[in-house]
Amino acid sequence: MIHACPDLSIVVPCYRAEKSLESLVAELDDVCDQHGWTHEIILVNDASPDATWVKIDEIARRNDHVIGVDLLSNHGQPMATMCGLSIARGRLIATMDDDLEHRPDQLPVLIARLDAHADLDAVVATWPIERGHFRDLGTRVHSFADRVAWGTPKGFRHTAFRVMRRPVCDALVAYETRSPVVGPMLTRLAGRVENVEVHNGERAHGHSGFTTRDGIRRVVLNFSSGSTAPLKLMSLTGFILATFGFLAGAALLVRWIAGADSPAGWLSVMLAVLVIGGANLMAMGVLGGYAEVIVREVRRSPRWSVRTIAGAVEEDES
Image (cartoon, rainbow, N blue to C red; front, side, top):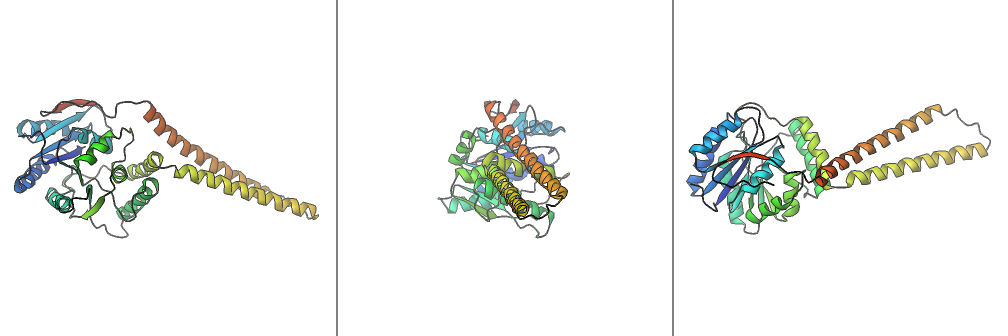
């Protein structure tokens, strides 16, 4: 039975997850029952092309703790997460992936930290990553982008496995952006967030849908949504190039006044054209990224579109 205000809401964005959902829900139910938590599990199907929604609907029909949300089109994991948060009613709200890499039996570790420290707003799970591994490099790049663009504390690591208190969830949902970056938004809105180390699991089925291209896109979105640092970098680059050109021109003028033969200069001219042309193209690309985000926000298009909800919750069309 789903309570009007359960102890815990668990939001899981789902994509190509039909094979792992049964085990995930069963393990979450077991953990919550062992600790006596009233709970709801919100499974958001992000327009997965496989039978993920069929499986979610089937589970929701026989499990009163499960609410299924079927999105009309693919919005990406951050927006699917935001959709689930808008429905969640718990005193505490957890988010996690659908592939069992985020182990349900580690939820009590996160919740115990919140219960032990009433001043904390949220906790974010972290786990050791092998140094020198490609995944470690990606984590470092993302952490740097988060720190520069959003002011995330140095050494803090964002993951999708987190637990937050009710006011934090409400604040996130009120953040009506069409380009959400949930982790950095969390640390910007809530001043008291800590990492908690947990044990990470292995993907039970298939492979991760998060590609290198997605990682690059996330870094770019971090900057264009949360910082004007690229624009400042463009201004600095332009200033440096202009200063270099002025000094080079002054040096050639002095040589000419002194009667020295001026060099043919074709190589220096070509290099200058290439450098300045490349800087202009880079600047246009950065401005284009900002323009894309601005247009998306100004259009005020729906943040997500819901086809149907399986469970006793009224649809919240945002």
